[in-house]
Every structure is written in structure tokens, then in C-alpha cells.
Amino acid sequence: MDLRQHIRGVPDFPKPGILFYDISTLLRHGPAWHEAVARMAEAIRPHAPTMLAGIESRGFLLAAPLALQLGLGFVMLRKRGKLPGATIGLDYALEYGTDRIEIQADAVRPGERVVILDDLLATGGTMAAGIELLRKAGAEVPAAAALIELTFLKGRERLDVPCEVLVSYDS
Ligand SMILES: O=P(O)(O)OC[C@H]1O[C@H](OP(=O)(O)OP(=O)(O)O)[C@H](O)[C@@H]1O
Ligand SMILES: Nc1ncnc2[nH]cnc12
Image (cartoon, rainbow, N blue to C red; front, side):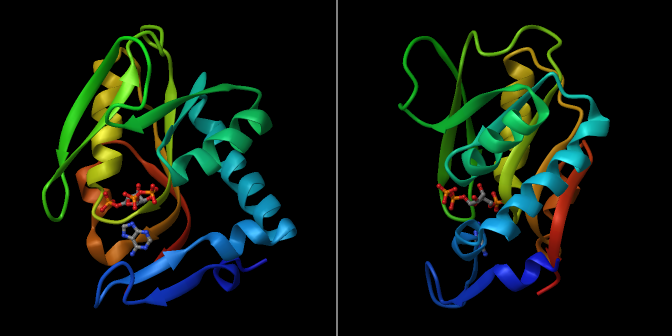
């Protein structure tokens, strides 16, 4: 199955000139979504994770079913101020301005092998921050994974681990 047929490019969202790769149409299609999760599980398995992590919010859509498929738990990396209890945070640069992601301080045990998931790798800033935050919390990060990579933005060059992807766009 060509997953590309189930991903919609929406022009000029969220601002003029940006082509937004919308996974809503993939999520809505049962067989395509099932296959995407199954293929992602097989791509991640060789990295031998003991746990998964998902980046808010579209990363959660992958982390939850993949954790079930692989028989693992998963941890939420959330935007600022959303997690209760003690947290560890990391500020990171966006195209315009900065953002912050956080993890609960007791979320991972030292040396836990955590594969980090997001829906899409664009500039790589979000994924790189997620990896750094997981390491700050004591995890090892053997790999990252995303459904979609926008290769022309070279986000992969910002990562020091392999990134598994299912669909790439070069423009
Ligand atoms: O590689 P980057 O340039 O950092 O961009 C990729 C990030 O941007 C999107 O998240 P967004 O902030 O739109 O949040 P959402 O998942 O809540 O929609 C996407 O889900 C990734 O997390
Ligand atoms: N072009 C894009 N489409 C969908 N999500 C994104 N996140 C960052 N860039 C994006």
C-alpha cells in the first residue's frame, strides 16, 4: 500500500507558503492507519527499545498504538506546564521564537532504551530537543522515528541517532 495516497498536502497552512502534510486522512482510513502502525513497529523493533516516547501532540498518536503493538510502555513529552509533579524541561529554538518541552522527572529509569516518535520530521528541532530531554532524564536513545520526513529541510542532520521514516517528501 502506498501510504502517500492517504497523506494530504494542504497549501498555505498555517501560513502562506507552507505546504502542510496532513495525517488526518491517514488516521481516518482504517486499513492504511493499521498498515502504517504495523510498518513502524517493524522499523523500530531492531533498535530493541524498552520504552517509547511520543512528542505532543501528533507524536502521541503513534506512540500509543506502537507501545501496544510492541508490548512496551510509553512516556509523554509535553509542551510547557502540562505535566503534574516534578518535571525536567528543555527550551529549544523554533523557526520563529522558542518553545519548551517537559518530561516527568521519574518517567524513565537510568539506561532505559527509549525510541522517540513524532508524526513528522521537518527542521528536526523538535526531535533533537526530545532526544536531548530524554537523555537529561537518564534515558539512552537508540533511534528516532517519524511517519513523514521533509528531506529538503535536512532535519536528519540535526540528529545524532538514526531516524526511521515511512514516507519522504523532497519538496
Ligand atoms: O522538525 P520541526 O521543524 O521541529 O517540526 C516538526 C514538529 O512540528 C509539528 O508539531 P506542532 O508544533 O505543529 O504540534 P502538534 O503536533 O501539536 O500539531 C510536528 O508534529 C512535529 O512535532
Ligand atoms: N509542513 C508541515 N506539515 C505538517 N506538519 C509540520 N510540522 C512542521 N512542518 C510541517
